[in-house]
Amino acid sequence: MIKPMLCEKTTKEEFFLNKDVPSWKDRHQANIKYDGERILAIKRDGEVFLQNRRGRIKNSFYAEVVETLKLIDGNFIIDGEVISLDDNFNTLQRRALTSKPSKQEQVRKEVPVKYMVFDILEYENVNIEDKKLSERVEVLKEFFNFVFKRESIEMVIYETDIKSLLELAEANNKEGIVVKDMDKPYERRRSRGWEKLKFFKQTDLKLIGYWINNAGIRCDDDKGNVVQISGHQHHEVKNKIDSEGYCEITIQYLEQSETTKRYRFPSYVGLRQ
Image (cartoon, rainbow, N blue to C red; front, side, top):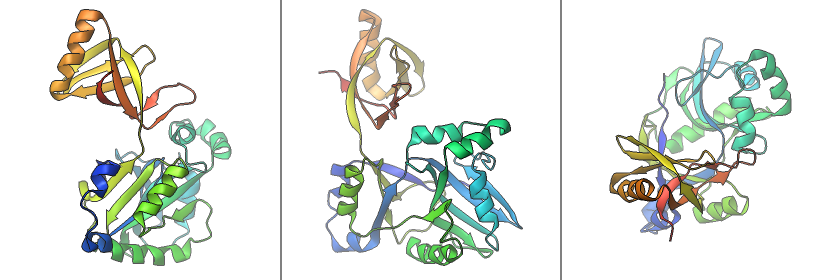
């Protein structure tokens, strides 16, 4: 299993604090944060393997991506995100969760996907993980000379005007942006070299139950939403549920599912004011 480089999370306020120094601006570029499934594509001696973050091989789920990558000569490792054409996570789930071969062909027709590639770790049998991202992007451009017109794969564009990209992403209801230090190597771990800035909304939940874990408590409401509350903050929530049978809290979330109405990536903000 190849471990992918992961982003640290940040907020808009934290992100732009003390970021006006010229050296920072010169080093950093950003790309749109796509709302799909993270995939590393590995080609070895004519065989292609699509590996997700957990190490699971997803070839049968995204067969058109495999077919395209098989047409490219040589061995390589590239990193990116498979998305639905409307860049909607709920839409993509129909592809990502359909494991029966008899149904995969049909859902492939109904939900076409695209592999958005933003990094390259190996090209023509040469490992380039230790090179700067700026250098890897130049190699990626060379790689895409062979796949430019393929519908199922596209190179992610890096932008130097980060604030303008952030405004564009927000205006187009995108998940957020990822800002990357162009001087950094590819690190197979979570790193401040890549910072993920998402746009979160807030709402209130009425929690009615919990179970204890090592980090604190995981709580749920009557609609199936589950929220982890960690550290000392969990005590006040636990006490309210124990004494009153429920606790009203505020969460932040990325989006609400159109089908289940549950919140995606809910995180605890505090007791409802």
